[in-house]
Image 1: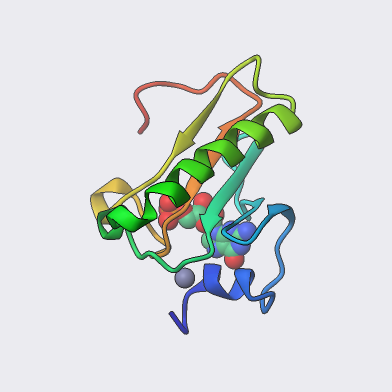
Image 2 (image 1 turned 180 degrees about the vertical axis):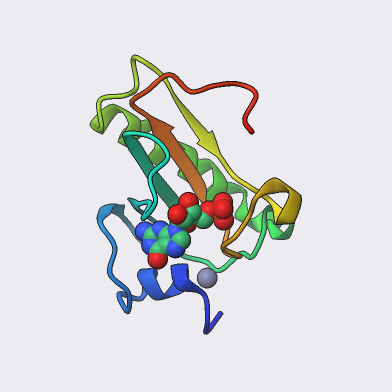
Length: 114
Ligand code: 5GP
Ligand code: ZN
């Protein structure tokens, strides 16, 4: 946890462009955007991977979807469409070991992903 960059952003020890914050969740712009709109929705609780989500986290995970809903509208991409992605472990492309949900939009996103 000590070396976790997202925990540092949550603690205010590292700079980020924050779009939203409440007691449970923070959302900030991705430092390397892959689309015109690209931010990360991150639970403040340090959960390393999707595989570490416990039953007690169900409300938190649902809340993240509510935040995504709200922010997609706020950023003006709700109608056109957008994507939420959570990468898990190496083959899934996870680099930061603190779960996060990418919210991407503002262009036509391809499927399947690379
Ligand atoms: P992952 O590959 O783990 O799903 O995604 C990690 C994401 O975090 C990447 O899109 C990367 O650009 C972003 N990221 C890594 N370090 C930082 C940082 O220090 N600040 C911000 N805002 N984003 C970061
Ligand atoms: Zn963390």
